[in-house]
Image 1: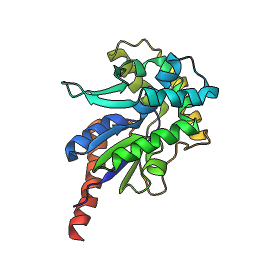
Image 2 (image 1 turned 90 degrees about the vertical axis):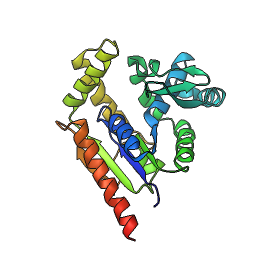
Image 3 (image 1 turned 45 degrees about the horizontal axis):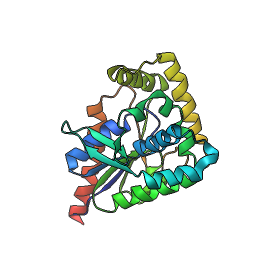
Image 4 (image 1 turned 120 degrees about the vertical axis):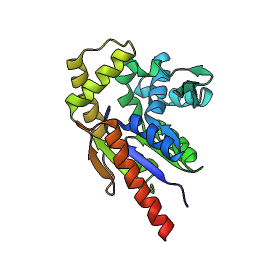
Length: 229
């Protein structure tokens, strides 16, 4: 039976990463958080005072300090640039508020997309991001596009930040999320949008378990069809 490629897309704080990790564990597939890759690139840019005009320098730094993933004993996914672990720094507000312009740089996207496709070529994978179903894995057998209201997504991010000790204001978060939605969906390169064959699922008011159940049921339907064919 051929392992699946599952693409989960959606705007900020729509629940992509949380459910993608759980689905990957259930099917014993690789999980890849592409958003963390763009955050890592943003972290490198900010650490080196780079702007959109410094794309060649950023590409050089990505070669010198490649992005990689590891796993803590607790099971938490760890993010590295070179041999430096940056799992928590890439979730800071400064990175969050700058990641859109870094992600809009065509050469950076091209570089990271190649890395993502290479990882996906090795077997079953659950990948989440903003252009997985449209650009990274257009051949994915299951494409999910998660949405939720700005209010609910801001509250989710607010609770996440509180748990991590990151100071945030709820109203400011709403404005930042709405602005990021606009930037991500209007950028010229790989804009945020649902693939034509994606299943759109509104997670507003839906538990994590409910979203996971929806995705796993759809995946099992595809696997069952494979068995029968």
